[in-house]
Length: 361
Length: 125
Image (tube, rainbow over all chains, first blue to last red; front, side, top):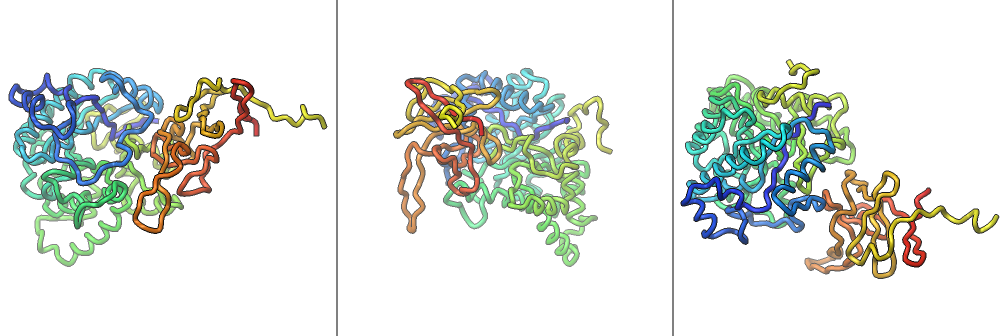
């Protein structure tokens, strides 16, 4: 089966891998400046909660930088016969939490160059995401234009923690650049500290498992905002990919949105379709962490209401503690070919279709 | 019926020196991986496949946990008696294989026999 894993985290052992890619001023900042941890930690404004066991699977134990790739190859890419793995970085997403947006831009730029230089040449199965810091949309747009033409770059990625809902016109320069270079805009769970102080509604949670269960909250806000602010009227071909934010909340949100729109469409006269129609056309959702009800048929019925067969993209979240293995994904068997790989071909146009399989029409 | 006819079939796993308290050994027997654990009062063996999502159960940390309480307090107990699955962190009792939050979910256990400095498992069921 053709498998595209849309969420594979390429770890580093030390953020100092970025040093060769930073301009001198920012290199000094990373070497001598304040950091949130010991040498090698990545600058970010931390979350108000802490994971009690750490984020990584306990069986992933890199000792060298090279191990980060070798273990990924052995325990993931080769083990599950993954055809394409979209790298989603890890700590670099947290640059969005820094108030100093110049520093944030410098860090993500260095990461992007490091990723292109160090990771992509290692394995033809690896594809890259341009990480941006959304705190400076014009800076982010410049970064998208700088690297957007690279053949192995398949998306633009930001944290789901942000200062404003992503449909806000403040962010539209990002989408203009994405549309220009032909890349999807994706958000991934994270960036929930520092300047992104409202990433959990009503205030910060105390326990990590609470926070993780609420990972859908910012995604709900962003999905609604992207639709209502007319992003998909301005950029009708833009795909918005929601990664690691859960999926089964979507149908009830769309039912509510469509009902409200029918009454109050005059507030947003630029919209020409129902909210759910924009969602179906322009938004895709990664599967992990797929909800786990006692009776899987309850999940499947919910997923049918969001046309999951066509809107879900497989993701493992390797090597995190809430990893979903490709061999153990509880979706309807008839959907597997599309969800595991073929749907991704529609979104990520630069991924080559398997020879034996035409792109989904 | 003779004693020999009723004796369980034993499979060699490893030497006692290969494991220590807090330091299990994962051995491959045929095509399956089994974690061999030394506890304060003996040995235990668990299939290295988590009944939750088939993760590498025995590669996770050995730990204790907080006792269920009636008030807001943190009483750490059962130190060294639990294994947290390496993938998703579900907690299992090393001796019984039972999952702490759902005792109907059970990791497969194998009876352990020690003969001198050799550790054997009863694997046939």
